[in-house]
Length: 290
Ligand code: PMP
Image (cartoon, rainbow, N blue to C red):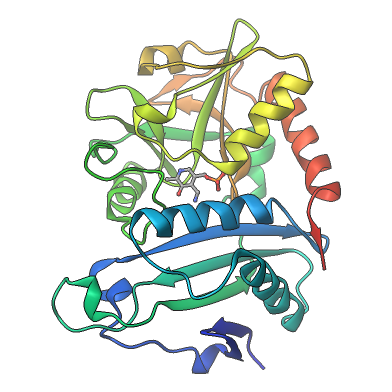
C-alpha cells in the first residue's frame, strides 16, 4: 500500500489523491505552501510553519478552510497514518477549482493537501565536506513586485536559478537581488562567519525569512556569537571565514566554494560545525510529539 495523503479533510491513498485541472494552484500557481520536518516523532517548529502558512494565505486573500489548531492536528494525523517518525511534510493550500480566467472569486473553496514522505536534499558528503555553489544570472524576484514572505506556489524564479546551477555543474545557486546584493539560494538562506560574527542578509534584500534561519540566529546568540543582518556583496562571501545555507530540508549545509573561490579553509568551518551540532540537538528535543 502506498502513502496516505490528506486531501480536503480525508486521508486517501496517494494513487487516489487527485485534484482538478481547473485548480488555480495548477493553472496559475495561485496558492501557498509550507515544508516541515519531523524528527523522532517530534514535528519541528510546527506552530511557526502553520503561522507562516496562514500569513501567506492572509496576504493573498485565500481563506484556509480550517483553524490553525485543526491544521496542526491534520499534519500529525497524516504522519501517524503513514507511521512515519522522521519525515518531510508538505502542506499545500490552493485557491481551488475555478474557470479559465484569473479571477480568484470564481474559486469557491480552497484545495488543501498534506503529503508526508521522506526527503534527502543533499547527499551526506555535503555535510562532511561542504558544497560548491555559483552565482546565477537570474536575480531573485523584485520584493516590491512579489514579496518573498508569501511562500506561494510560484517558484519559477527559483527553478530557473536551480536549472542555471545544474547547467554550471553544481547543486545550488546563489541568487542576488536585482541590485546585485546577496539574497538567498533557491530554497535556502545564506550565512557567513566574518570576524567571528554570524552575518546574513536582511529580509529587504528580497529573501524569505526562513524558520531555520531564525532558529540558527537564536542558537548563535545563545552561544554568545554576535549576530547581524547586513547587506552583503559577493566579495563579502568570497572573503568570509565560513559560509553555510539553512533550510527546513537542507538543515545546515556548509559551503566551501563560491564561483570558483574557496571559502576559508575549504572545509566546513568550526562555527558551522558547532551550529550544526546545536541544531541537531534541538531537533531531538524541540517539537510537537506524536
Ligand atoms: N528561501 C526560500 C526561497 C525557501 O523556499 C525556503 C524554504 N523552503 C527557505 C529560504 C528556507 O526557509 P525555512 O528555513 O523556513 O525552510
